[in-house]
Image 1 (cartoon, rainbow, N blue to C red):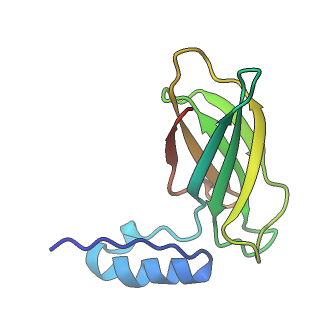
Image 2: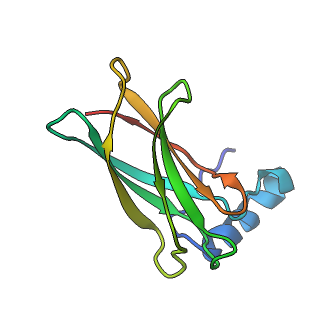
Length: 133
């Protein structure tokens, strides 16, 4: 039997739920505590041909020692196309959405991958792949 779980809440509840649900089934290797996840991405094409990204990130920010500190936009080949640095923790605002405008996308690229990172683990957990409008 295969069980599918979607954890929509952020913060300590999300981490505790993942541990309780996954540890007995898959062991410690399946549990990722404290990594930043991209929950949603909305993309708009600007009149000049650049793009604006509105990215929702979920992370169990605990303060200045451990918080989601950026998200990035990558071409399918891994090329970095844009980065939004997050300069402070969002302990009481989870999930949160921040935007980045003026992102240039090379000709021929029709989809991108958005990744979050945090100050402890670097590259985060769940990435988000999106088709460009």
